[in-house]
Structure formats: structure tokens, C-alpha cells
Length: 552
Image (tube, rainbow, N blue to C red; front, top):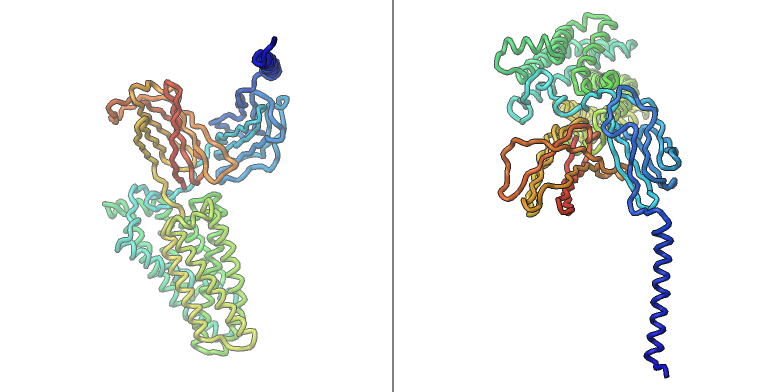
């Protein structure tokens, strides 16, 4: 007689065989007959390769992986040093679906970042980035390049601290700008408004004579104080070298010669006057920050037009105030002419100013990083107030009313404030200074040091030091990866570290030291970055350390 227990025993045995058969079938189906897909897609070939430097622009970027890719998940882009995509084209499939190609336009000299993202056959996303170089690109402008001390061969910036000398330099520069803009503006109005009334011509010539003398005095004070700041020990030899052998020195000489000629403007014809104004404004544009950036013709040209528009407005406003003090009805008639040209000047000032800022700064965020940006934002705010005052004055003029003295004085006050700000912020640098990175972190199972020098966009040297407990042995792998933050379209850039013998005395008792170095353009653009140091010890235990830093 079969008991209940025996029935259940037979049932579970049969159920076990069925489950075993099902498991075997699944294994044969998905493990025995289908190639294993337990590894993600790996990049096996890239052209150009990571770290490549070529004289000519590559025709395309090609990436090939070890397995077929999901065509809907392929992304490939090439970014320039300002994080702009060099082409909007989409990548095409190559190598039977295992690779992709992105045609490129002709690239100029520079460092370019290739960023890719694919979906492998096992459904996992694979992404990364690397850098290649075209030509021999010059380093991007930095704060040091904008420092006149560096330009004349001095290592120290004597004017960086707010000292009594710096205050005198600011004051001289403000007076210099005021005199230059007023004198150049009066010259422009002598050519622009040839049909002016005898009274306006008389007032203009009188103030042009005074402005020319003030320009000479202000320029001499500005150049002498600037040279004093640049000089080191030997007054005669160092001063002569700066004036004769450096660009900034030769520009100072030209400014003094033109300032002397400014005292003769009242005796010159219109063509000679206009030539004087054009030369002085051009030299001032050339001696500023615009000369550091490329293309120089563009940035210096923008600065020249900006200064010319500012001169037209400042000189016209001074002339209007002078005529208003002499005769009110004549001032009203001149104000109608001035208000129209002032509007044109302001439009040109806003456009050229905005374009210059975009040329100087990698992004508008940089306005918040320096005092240069702070002063510029204040200048923009005051300029808006000037525009409001100008609209009120022009509205009264269109109604047939004379300009109010109070409004003219307010407008002149705003003008003075703007010139004051210009005298300050043109003495400062729009870019923050980059400093070499030296980061060290202690830990129980790992100490590490990361050094990056000069820690600026472009070519850098990288040093990674790792200290592991002696019981852990030599690490199997030490990797350094760099990731630009706030850029979802760019993956980690792998830095190819190589071991080297370190002679520095920085041992820790009970720890072994392992050192690695690399050189290359693995920080191709400015911004905030995350550095990731990955250490795999002899027992395959991986430790990941991260830190953030910014380069300008």
C-alpha cells in the first residue's frame, strides 16, 4: 500500500527533474550556443588617436569597437577649446556596424576633444573622451599674459597689491582717459559738425586748446607712473631697455609724442586733426588687453571702434555743457544734433563692448571671478542710467524745450563715473590667474598626491603619487581620469600615466610609495573639472579618490 509520504516523494523527485531539465535548457540556449556577452564594448581603434598631434587637419574622426553597436545609441562630437562643436553633422556607421565616422571641416591650430557615447551589444552604455592636437597651438591667454611686468621680462607684479603707487597709477590713468576722450571727441566734432554756428565753433576751439594741454600733462603723468611701476633696479639702463626694446615701451613713446602734438591741434586742419585722433585711439587700443587675444586685428579693431564711439559721446557732451553755459538757445540747437549722434555712439559702445567681452572671456561666468568683471558690471549699470537720462533729454528736445541744466549735469556726472571705472578696470586683468595644483590627501588605506602644472588649458604635466600599506604590495593599476563638470556631453579623459623614479623625500612609515607622470593636452579647455584617481591593489581591491578644481 502506497502511503501519502511516498506519493509526495515521487512527486517532488519528478518536479526536481523537470526544473533541472529547464535550467539545463536555458543554459544551453543562452550560454552554450550564443557567444558570451559578459563584457562591454571596448574601443579598439581611433583615428586620430588619443594624444595625436598632426600638422594638417584630419578629414574625419573614426572610432571602431570590438562588437556591433546599437545604431540608435551612437553619439560622437568634436569640441574646440571653447567647448563649441566643430560640426553639427551626425556620425555614420562603418565596419559592419562596429564603428562610426564623423566628417570634419578644416580645423585650425588647437586642441580638440573627441567625446563619444555608444550602447554595446549587451545593452550597456559606453562613453569616453580623448584629445588630439592640430598644429602647434599657442597657449590660451591667461592672467600672466595680460600683466605688463611679464611683457617687459619681470617676474613680479609690483602693481598687483593696492598700494600708494597703485592708487597713483589709477588716478593718472583716469585723468589720462578723460583727457584723451575729450580731446579726441572735440576733434571728431570739428569734422562732423562743420556747419556749426560761430558760437559753437568758438567754444569748441577754446576747449580744444585747453584739452590738448591737459592731454600732454595727463599722458606724461600716466607714462611716468607706469614706467616707475615697471622699472626695477637700474633706472637708466632698465628704463631705456623698456622704452626701446619692448612693445609697451614703444607705445608709451608714441603716446608721449602724440600728446605733445595735441597742444598744436588748434592750428591744424581737419584732416591732420582726424589723423591725430585716429592714431592716438589706435595706439591706446593696441596697448590694452585687446592686443593679447587673437585674432589681433579683430580685438584691437573692436577696442578702437569702442574708444572712438566713447570719444564722440564724451567730447560732444563736454561741448554741449560748455555751449549751454555760454548761451542756452544755441545749446538747445546743438543738443538736437548731439542727441542723435549720442544715440548712435551708445549703440556702437554696447555692441563693441559685448563682442569684446565675448572675445576676452571663455564664458560670461568669468564676470563673477575677478574685480575686472565687477567693475564692468558696475559700468554697465551706470551706462543704463546714462541711456535713461539721454532719453529724457531727447524727449524734452523733441517737444521744443531747452535741455535742463540739472539733467545735463547728471549726464556729465554719469560720464565722469564711467571714465573713472574705465581707468580702474583697464588696469586690471579680465582673467583670473591659474596656479599649479598641488593636492594631497591622507587616508588609512591610501595616501595620494596629485600635481598639475601649470594647471591651465592646453598642455600640462601631471604627477600622481600613491602610498599603500606595505602589506598591500605593488598596485596593479593606477589611473587618472579627468571629467569636465556641467558638461554632460563630454566623458572622462584618460591620462596615460607612466611610472617614474621619484627623488623627493616624502616617505610614510609602513607605506610603499609609487609614482607616475604624464605630459599632454588632457585639460583642453577652461572650466571646473573633477580629477579621479583609481588605484587597484595586488588583491584586486579598487580605491577611487575624487577632487574638484577649476582652471581659467
